[in-house]
Length: 189
Image (tube, rainbow, N blue to C red; front, side, top):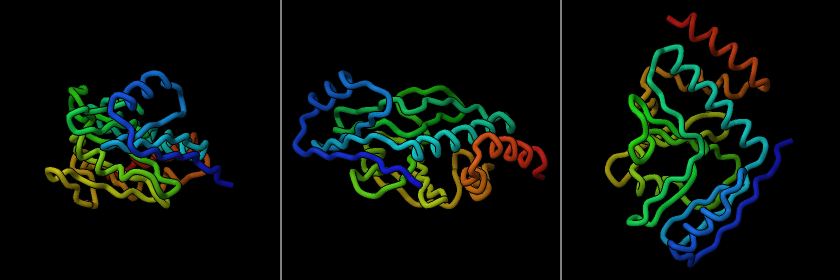
């Protein structure tokens, strides 16, 4: 049975209040998303965290097996005062080089609907690709200036088969999924 996530949205929050809350309430399991005075507080469920870790383990295994320089920053807080935006992605990565300011790829696990539109936040941060894991599949969005365009494959990790990746994310046993994905990668031609 899927555990529900806790979500609370507050409107009319000044930037300095968001920053102070984020700094003071820096506790594991509390995510904050801020855009132009609206603050969303989320406490992810066990199911959410299991999905994000499965995705992370599989992507990192892909990078290791294919010798792709991938730098992981987990769910670090990224914010930009001049655009009035901030959040913690579920997972995030830079491809090719270490983080300069914002990640190249942000991953969001979506188990429940509602809350702040994350693409609007990411566009203000300049994240190049946002991957949503929702209903057992990936939806990838690539930055096109101030907007995002839905794409079928990652432009930053073009050799990663997202359909196959999704199949392994859906496995009920995380450890077995990682081993099976490694075997699949080594036998893929």
